[in-house]
Image 1 (cartoon, rainbow, N blue to C red):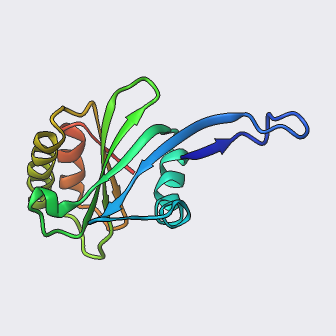
Image 2: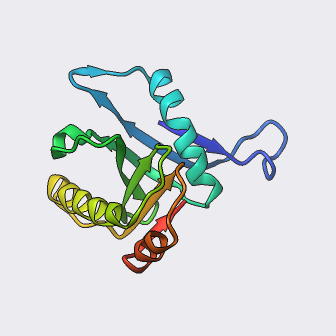
Length: 146
């Protein structure tokens, strides 16, 4: 469980909790220690927090469970109101094109079948450049691009 504190509005010696996140993260049969998990997810959580997104539950879904060979990290998250969000983290150097829009939609459909519920919010975290037509298509289909 991660606790995020608001140090600006805290009284002296106090650290009020702004949000907390329960982490479920496994590699095969080995459960990672808290500190290993924290260092692996901290950049993602910090990036979400800079955009005002705080989740109380964040679980990574292994791509192999969905039959995907792509180099993508998939997360199922629950926000403070109880709504589900799908978070796709893509770390690649090549540009994301229109053909990738369909690919991500099929991955989302597989993820919805795997977790057995729909997602209210879809978040795409990119490190790669994005084609303008692909960006328009993502926004039209309801994706938030971070």
